[in-house]
Image (cartoon, rainbow, N blue to C red):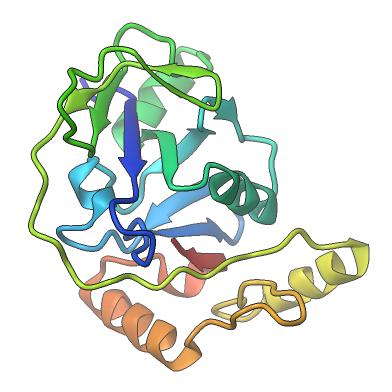
Length: 208
């Protein structure tokens, strides 16, 4: 039976990203993992494209908007822990009407860091993390980080209008670094063609 996974990541090089995209899709609630880069921190932590995100750093985010979740990830600095469910695990717990949390005994914990400790008593933002250490993969090329800022009512209205298009860009404030749109669209087009991306169903998209 599929079980919840608590995927803990620590940036080893602050110029790199975690190696995954966070998206919200049309006609679906919640946040999903997409475009996990092979060999990245996200890949080593066990994240899979299509995973449903339940918690970020021990905090349940099921009622949060996409910008709020992105901000919560950014607040973690160079560490983030995601509680995720694949489709089989989500269906199982939905049938039982169980709200999954990171304190459940069946949760599988995986960390990417490999310091000289057993990682049996780590704490991230006050939440207890008991992780299984994994071996570090060879370093991959840096993954760009696209930051999203909280949006006000007027921007929220604009975001809803943009949701009708295949891809709504991340909201950015004046002076913030803009995403490389051509690179993002090219990457997503390739993933759509290979069947590994949410593609046109993406409502909000952030590469992290």
